[in-house]
Length: 59
Image (cartoon, rainbow, N blue to C red):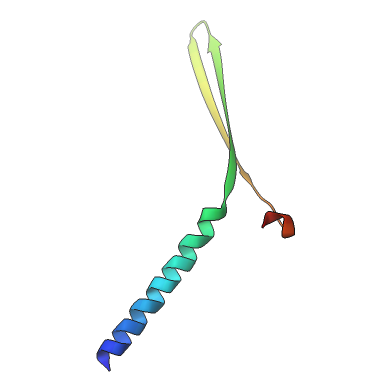
């Protein structure tokens, strides 16, 4: 009985972990890098925007 409960608890934990990890893999983002050169040096700016989609088109 103890082995069955341990196996069941492990399976539930694994399933829950897979569901949580699977949700984050579908994100998209756009990265824009800009470099400004001046007489005193240069400055690099990186801008990251998350792309959000809703509805049937997101599938």
